[in-house]
Image 1 (cartoon, helix red, strand yellow):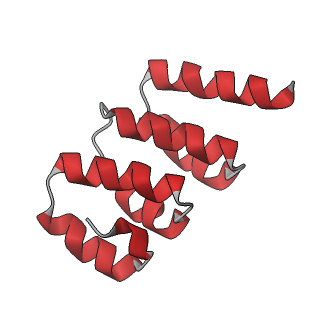
Image 2 (cartoon, one colour):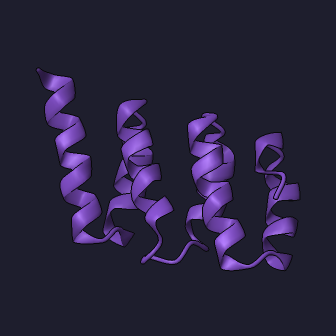
Amino acid sequence: MAACTGERDVVELLRRVCDEKDVARSLEDAAQKCKWDVVEVLYQHCDTESRELGATLKCAIEKAKWDLVELFYPRCKEKDLVEALKVVVEQRQ
């Protein structure tokens, strides 16, 4: 998926024809590249069991994107929340 383009409308169209694994990979890729508008589109369509959702939460914490952290954390698994909390603790030290 062309998530790295940052074109929100294009990403939404592509998301409709991609499978869940592609959406999850694109979500993580967009977060790593700080394409937060793309992340906002994709996270809603990412399976809550996906590893990438937790990785995206950690990335948002590392980049201090607190509005997105608030958006993501309710959909994350407990294990991912614990890992994300560790990132916060490390940053505060």
